[in-house]
Image (cartoon, rainbow, N blue to C red):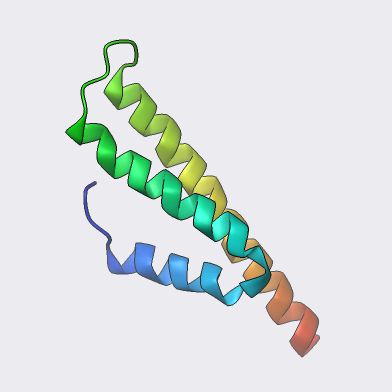
Length: 80
């Protein structure tokens, strides 16, 4: 996928709400940029699709951690 959908944007916004994870969000942006750059470069020693799949998994894990931490902050402050 070469574009951000509204789902991705909402996940990224949830991650931004976790303001104490700025470093992880910066790392996520770097990974997303690397994922988008794979199509622009030709790797002789890597399979581009395999590397893109690995980056997809890493990005998914980061987004999932943003959602979980955002939910934990929500629960902690509202004491649900």
